[in-house]
Length: 137
Image (cartoon, rainbow, N blue to C red):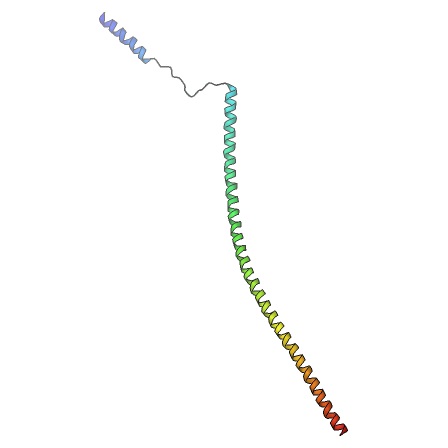
């Protein structure tokens, strides 16, 4: 009898240990529909904002490259402007020198005209005197 009880005890204990344990699924979360909708809307907004962020970052980098190119153009134009100012200064100096030379030449021409006029008057008087002396003497 002891053996039968022992065998029965082993069988029942074996059955108890062989039963499947109930597992709880931790992936399923229960919440109200309204909260789940708000969460989905927030997740969709997050995805949309991430896409917009990528677009905005691309646009910002494009604008930064344009700004760098324009800054280089501005530097080149400023350099050209400085060179042009140097050329304009040289041309003004040359113009002033030419104007000064022209003024000096006008003064010399005026002196030469005065000199030739005086010579013509003196020579005319001299020839008139000689002619008068030749004719009336």
